[in-house]
Length: 281
Image 1 (cartoon, one colour):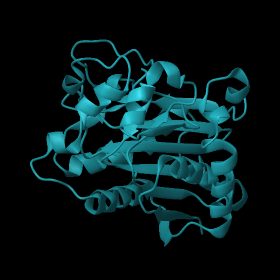
Image 2 (cartoon, helix red, strand yellow):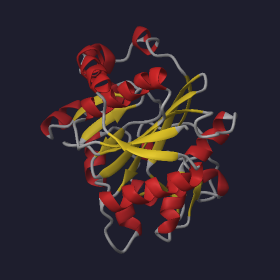
Image 3 (spheres, rainbow, N blue to C red):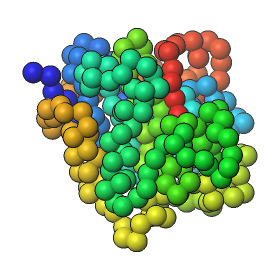
């Protein structure tokens, strides 16, 4: 019987988080067992989209002063400051979760457990394409900073973007991860990124900005798992990172995520992991 591994990992630096996400993806190609992973970031860290040039996105000197590092993701979209947030990643095939063939519809279905979790808190969460955002047309074009732009399947509450999700596909294999901010430091964001809208607070929000009571990482994670199980009707098993996945992660750290080559922009670099891509945020 098909089942899904649920993995909770300890807070880690961004290099390790991104390396482990890819290690789980590579391991899935052998095991064919889908995975839902939850994790946090310590210390604060920046991930940039696969096609971004860090020189025009990040204020390097300011990041150095604040001791904030960055690495490139294998997914597209805009840069994110990962701070007080819960992050998830999913590795699966279309068949694992009985997803629609359409890329957009499968993306919509995969994000449904997040929408339902927000609704559990009494929030009127919906996809951007379902409502008129300040009477502005949704461009569907990603911005340099993830939370600053609104695309068709971004999740909105009261017209404000809540978090961001990105997906990468290889044939019928899907890798998706997303940021669920419990709190956003707007001052820090404006201080370390270029071209941040001065009124970012009017279009972007966090759970703390929407709810009267604080929510713990544990409660949020528990609800996300509950609605994932309800939406996809798949048996789940709590699991840990395997020895093989750890070995792959360590190799990727040394050969990729901590290297200048991976974290700079070049045509050769971009061609290394060329998947058919669908992303939001």
